[in-house]
Length: 267
Ligand code: HXC
Image (tube, rainbow, N blue to C red):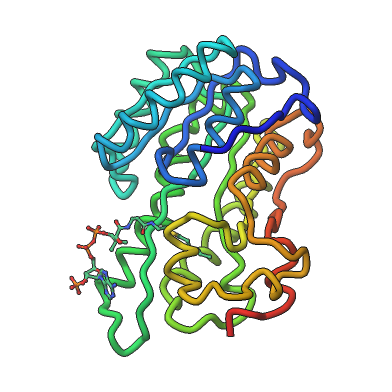
């Protein structure tokens, strides 16, 4: 996990007393989002499928929490494809923190496959994890978000802005997430809940990056800002979108990719 001095930009205690539930919370990007929120005082609930991975991220985060007066709880064995599974972790999170202010729908699945070798079940699996999983997460958290006038962050991508080969299933799922976020932003706006997306570009050290960019030689030169993304780049965007500085921002997709997709370089 990277160590960053968020206080140089963000105010200490910005999220004191707040609570955030993060699906896919033990993944490389999401655990950095969790760490950043915790450094600013937010308690976090890490939700994932793999109990061991969740436990190891929770013990890393506990150290950050001790310094920032923020708590962390972790729930493994939760599959976002099951609304019952999500409802159970929401209940446990509320019992730990008394509330949920922020939600990050970070759980995702991905593999490379050309259309000819992509079974109907393989397509459905990714759509179910990414899109239905995001729906289930918001559905299960909704009563708490209504009470807290909270904020939702979906994790999308830039794959569907153009055609990325071997990613038809992921592109379709991520396009759906953008659409879900847009619709919910409009529905939830009048009750004080904001919904936004972050679309990360190539973030070093992630499974997605390793699968999509097997040849990393001179890769930085293909990115307008001349470096691969870091997990802190997504964490900084997350802090901004949850913070009061973004109080009039809903229904937006924040692309955090160093300008990469504008170059069309996946093709
Ligand atoms: C073709 C594949 C496949 C592959 C699985 N399948 N892997 N097909 N190529 N490499 C097919 C299986 O054969 C099966 O179809 C169906 O998909 C379901 O597979 P299961 O293994 O039963 O599913 P499950 O156990 O639920 O696992 C889901 C998973 C897995 C997505 C397949 O990889 C996973 O759990 N991933 C989570 C972690 C992850 O991927 N993280 C990376 C996120 S990166 P059949 O027809 O045989 O039944 C990311 C970035 C995206 O999301 C954007 C990048 C810019």
